[in-house]
Image 1 (tube, rainbow, N blue to C red):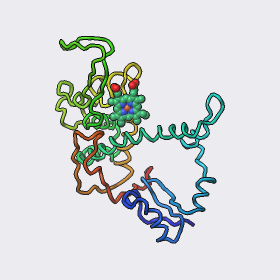
Image 2: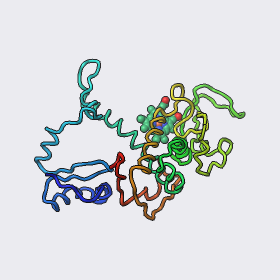
Image 3: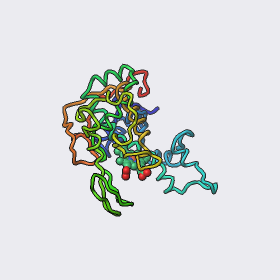
Length: 275
Ligand code: HEM
């Protein structure tokens, strides 16, 4: 029988203790395996030669998992993917979540600064969720600017742009341009109620359209993921946030609060997805 740690979640302990995290607990419990929760999900930690053999030889991935789909995928030639290609494909699934997690931290900070929104979402309000997420993407710095070279000469605002000239488009500045946004330095999701998706004003992930220009094709996924993050943070877990430096530097790319966003006493809300 594998013992279970008493702490509701061990993510912070793992980050704090690093390499010693599993061994320390195994020594303490007199076991080679224990159950805990990491990132709020049930996890089993194991060590030793026997565990290594079981994990490498006998462990299989659930049929409906991403690992199983990629490992079992056959190309047009009927062959399985090469190992490096399969590895890259797996990373391609992880990378988007890692990128969007930065916005997730900024959303968490916003929920702390604006309890009105936290309370509304905690109470099950979904109507303004998309507006909230759009405002997080508009308000915070992420990609500062995009660069390009002129392909065909043109004139704009009496300035001649010649072939090969380098041009930088200010994304953050456009998202905070008072000609497009009322009180741009105020965090106000209500500005996005009924918004008609102007492709040239909210350009945190590029301008124009996905199909015809270079707008980030991941943008819809970013919004879905962030909605899930907000639901999770407000409905499925409770946590404490201590005193720390939430300052956001405008010359750190991509940016985060100075101390990150350190939470403690994380507990799942019974009866929710995190429980
Ligand atoms: C939330 C984090 C992200 C931000 C802030 C972001 C931002 C951007 C920006 C500003 C552009 C436009 C570049 C330009 O106009 O030259 C862009 C393009 C692009 N992004 Fe993202 N992105 C993010 C996440 C992702 C992720 C996770 C993926 C992949 C799954 C992705 C894939 C792409 C691709 C393929 C393009 C190029 C599109 C094209 O040239 O047609 N992005 N992104």
